[in-house]
Image (cartoon, rainbow, N blue to C red; front, side, top):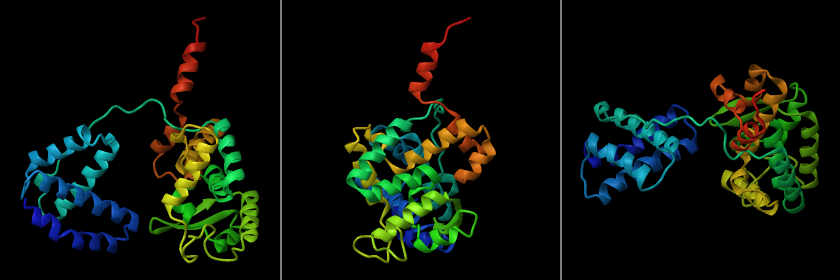
Length: 287
């Protein structure tokens, strides 16, 4: 397959994906991934590629770029989709196999969470409320970015469910009444009467971007002297899932709260951390 075919049809491919209502963020990932493959081929003086070259690229991502296997597999899925779109399904390759971890990584403890929250409240009140929302609703970062004052107020009449446009579709997410009151008071104190709860500092008509939101939480984590790998908004979604799973012992309820489409995802929160597994074994004795 010729490189020109990869390059010249990319815009058409992305347009078709957009017509299928793929989110802009996902479109960006598709474009970056295809261009990265094209650059790899050019750097290796190849004007075309076959299945062997494609496999070599997959190995390059693993052995040279040191990408994690789930990331590599995501890129392979994207490239396979594009290659099939161009009419060359015979060039598709398989994803890498790997053993599923029997523990979960980088989930803050409740003590970590409280330390990060205190640091955020002292240094960046915006980060404080981002953490609160992530921890008590399980909302993903993209959804938190898109919270509006109007949606918050409407949730009072909607059984404390907030409607959010995220990833190209509207979702309803449970939002505790006490938290709604707190964030609306925060908005009032900041003079935010309508629009996004967390507006961009450069353009009030746009939301704070995910990268900035992540950076704010990351900085609060550093201030709290907690492992930085535990300091990102999605980590608090994991914390909620883990703690509420232990408390409820009801997979369906946890699945509904976190918006999981598969119960396999919910089951991940029943896994222990490495530290918890070690503690169990250290305390275990045959009776």
